Image 1 (tube, rainbow over the protein chains, first blue to last red):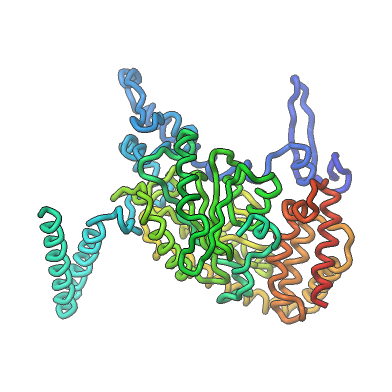
Image 2: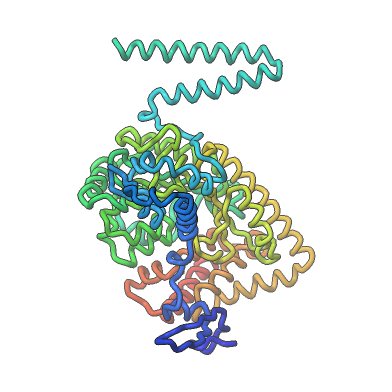
Length: 182
Length: 354
């Protein structure tokens, strides 16, 4: 079938238009569909984002079903910082500010799990300046995990080295804290 | 650096360098999403706050240097014409989303166009860095340094548990999107890429067309990027991406060899016909141009076409996009006029190499 607009290229898209109750079939090629406005393309197409807002709404449908009638009267959750409401978030799929993460934290984990293959916790970079003693904390955590593994593997020589590193890091962090207090 | 310089050349200076595996991998990119800790995200912030952020970037970073990346130009997006915005998108210097924004949106771009920072996009800051060929660890290292450089003056929105806080929950955590642009004509010809995509998706990676989400793979150029930003470190994410890309490179090379062995004459015929079309046509649509350019690039990689530079695909893919054509013609063109100018520009470009 050839495109009814250009009568040249093959029609690859088929639409049913209903105008004032009259149904008409439209058969067009991709080029004409774009040019004549039958479809928006490409940024406005069905995107990952549409899919995500779908997921969030599914989440809310589940929750509403679980809630008893008395809960429905409860005032809607709103971010005190930016005013973003839970229902708006579900519609747009985006947060309004950093505080939203705290405001909606109770509802966040299922969403994050769905989007990030079950993950809800950050394991990556920590800001150099803003991170503060988080760097030391994370480093200690990772050393401790390593130490545990080395002990399990009965690799005591390396375990001793890691133990010393942990001690050094703890001493360093304690002395810098003492320094801050003075 | 002025806007005009970014608009004139189709390929960015950094693209002229060859990187590892650059017969198949065109570029590696790291993008980090960051936000100011105490300002609402662009979808909700008031205009005044966004203007403050924009002005801060102009004041602090215009004409500054970060390591080898010199002379950052500051460009206010609302001040640009529609064509100028489009050219910046076609050169991948800014996102389509930023190009449409009139809300105090801006960008700073280094002179060699390797580094750009988008301001007031979906997040306050989206910094991105490109490297030629497959160089993800190097790109990540530099992106981290650039991030630290910006953080010296900016308080980022960060949470111990959630990581870098972003407007969209799909970016929270590392805020990182790492992507690799690959030319995979043999995997596309043999339809193997369609069979591989679901397996790649299972690793938390996505395969897309050249202009990102929702776009098709024009000219057999595919973008492979990470989908997950939470629960894995940046190094682990790029490790997974790098290993998938390496496998794709190997499969692509094997597929090329197999096609050459089994139907070398047919492939050679296809490549030279495409070369002929590019060299002689008077009217060419963007889709046909992309297909022919992909074939010619394959011909160069296979050693069948000599004396044409490998960058031809990169360069002409960008040069023949609607924005660039209109920039070149300094006029708004109809689709027919664009097809004509496209054909003549390609002919002109190929003549240069004869």
